[in-house]
Image (spheres, helix red, strand yellow):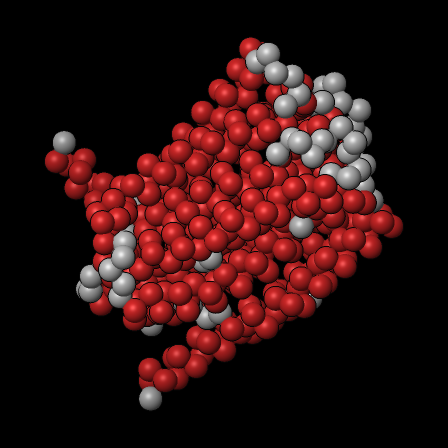
Length: 440
């Protein structure tokens, strides 16, 4: 056993993290894709469209974490480099998260019903007495609170742990939706279908949370003002970025609920899930090397940063292009397998535009993740208002003119005119300025 342990210890931690993330994301993606068939059989097309819109709300409710996890991850990375204790920041993270979560729960309870009436006014079968938005909101806020523990594992180069947990949750969800479809006496329940996917994630995140924060809970009211202030200030900056990211990446379903038909929402959801299989591989690698980039920046190893970025551009660019061609060739088979009873048609233009959107999104992520790992955040605050306006207006008006393809046009345009246009120059300037200062 000793030689195996020695060999394991020699493997770079971000490789282990990325490998475990890829394995996990493959499982999660497959579950999401296969579950489309089960959900369509259980819910039908119209209710599945409502399910898709409601599930997209999880991204908005997850904002209740207020960027605490990401900010904490960077603080822990800094403590590791300086060989300092991170306990004060972990306790501060628990205190801030608990307070914000309580506020978020109260707001959700008040706002859920009127929000549901607005979102689903085009779906007469959705009664206001069915607490769809409330159920999604309460469980997602709890999940976001618990999942801040995941960032701690990433910061300590143990990202394989939080990578494995979503895979376990996904398998539990798949089993739950199959049982619901086969054995439940309650037909077509959108809330039950949503809970099949949200509850396992929440419970498993709770287990990870207890592992990290158990020893800090008795100290909950011991306030370190400096640690709380520093963490909250940095988290607030990340929160602004998160809000912008969610508004331009997750407002699509909300706009579609007002501008396109149920069948278009279903088709969009199916092929987005298929493309997400490729996108997850990219995003898991970027998440895995975040602490590596952060530590390399602090240590001024700029060549290492540039080399990693170049490789990521080449790998993900090739992968997205090949994936788009494959999805285009087998689009008919995908529909027959995942939605055999649905009356859905998909055009080649939808798949090509979707492939181009994911390619642009991946390239944007490389610059975005790299800069955020350096704690360079001001540029995102500057770009965010423009990106939000371009994205929202583009999706709404283009979807009115071009249908579901217009949603992708708006998304793509918002990236091209903001992050793709400005972030490369910002990264080059940051590395150049730091290099000059270190040499002077």
